[in-house]
Image (cartoon, rainbow, N blue to C red):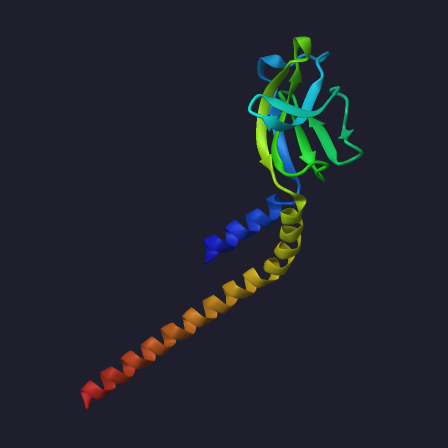
Length: 156
């Protein structure tokens, strides 16, 4: 029970309903290159847009970009397109996309449900732990009492 409670609390803290795609630069980092966010349309193609490294908000506020030393992260607040496989990368020569990372992004309705559900589960988990503790303690006492009764019957 303790392990389950720990996992649920950890998930509640890390699952804030925002999906993220982290894109490691590797050797492709070049401050003059444009970054890319797009949805895969076929095995080798995607549709989306490019942006510069100073951008922090994209697609009318639906996406947030944060820069790291060796990567950038796109936080998906709301999908403009349907769920699917999304890419992030850099725009190379001849407008070729160098894909750095990809992830299947789900529609936000699942995130919305989790946001509500976790607030319902949070108070229930400690209560379930306490109830389980006292129930097991009560069962142990009943077992001890039963053993005492059996012992006293044998002595007579």
